[in-house]
Length: 79
Image: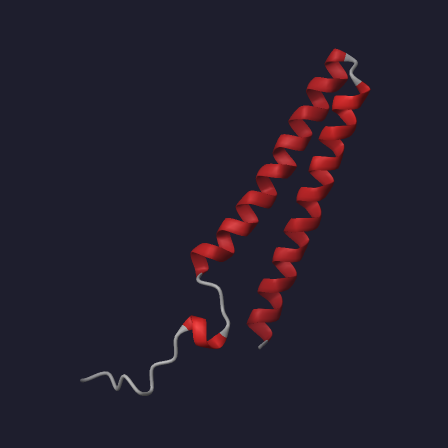
């Protein structure tokens, strides 16, 4: 069986991200969450409110980015 190259549609033509690119965004967001929690925990032990705030903000940023990634993936599945 031969593939008709005129009928092949690429992910780029469809505006879809490759699966590896989808995973990369989620992993980066999850790493921010983990790093933020670690910073916050260390800051509490050191009684450093500024570092604790930075850790909390980093974790919150990671949560937002993860939610955005999930919304993008859901939208792509529905298209």
